[in-house]
Length: 209
Image (cartoon, rainbow, N blue to C red):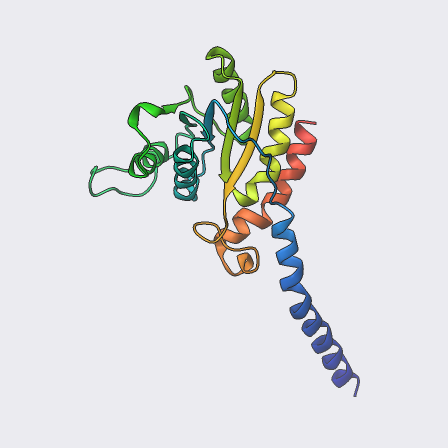
């Protein structure tokens, strides 16, 4: 009798979790998405993202064609992708991102690369601030993936707060390379981009406060 009651109890708890989890998971994903509006900028900065470089580069190309900025800047994470039959090598992701921009119709002369390599979003923000100061840019529009926007906005506020340089943040909509908010937990990439983003946020708040 006790075993039966225990099984019933676990069944009820498991059922409740199954009903509640999709709602909680969706709210967790949406909680990572934000933006910082900037109608026009001196340059668009595409943040590195090896797994999602296509959606970021294509969205940056869209913004370029909308006239939001006259140039697109890439950061270099110095990471290589898979084998390219055309190139007969494993291209760096920055090369792939540049190819996506050119394929989207962004002129070659309008695509630039920040000097040096980066290992984190904070590195990218510092590199972008240095580049903007050296080239007398007064505004930058950063492009990233949706679930990376909250950490990006927080980082930019820290790095650029006394620079006199205005920053904005926009992202490609989830659903292409990034899983949708309602189903991210069904994909390995979703766990990487949503579940792991919260520990990264905590780390940034602690490390760069």
